[in-house]
Amino acid sequence: MNQILHPLPCARLQERAFWAQGIGQTLVEYGKSIADLPAELRLFCTPNDLSMAQISQTDMNRLWHAAAKLSQDDCFGIKMGEVYCSNTLKVLGLAAVSSETIGQAVQRIIRFFPVFSTQVQLYSVEDEQHLTVYFQPKGA
Image (cartoon, rainbow, N blue to C red):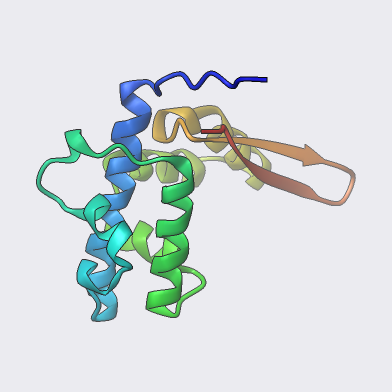
């Protein structure tokens, strides 16, 4: 069976380019640079012309993994959030902080998360004792 690959919407490509640029800038906080990444991943982090970045989901996964390994920080993404925080992410944080309960905060984040990222879907499962939030990649 032949698989037909459809081009990604421009917004998805721009979002990946945004994250790649953030990864490159956050590596500086660890005393590292884009030059320390594997050669095949370096070109994705160049801050100049992100409109040309055609980053596959596989390459994004490899880039995140390489950055975490290079920084020796399993929580590299959290550090990036502190360093390279967009206004959209700050709005998500405000939505959570202004909630009356943790459950309400989680539901607000889930509701507004598509404004922040089109690559991941958030959903929650709740029982009598726990509320679990899941991140589900949306694919290619």
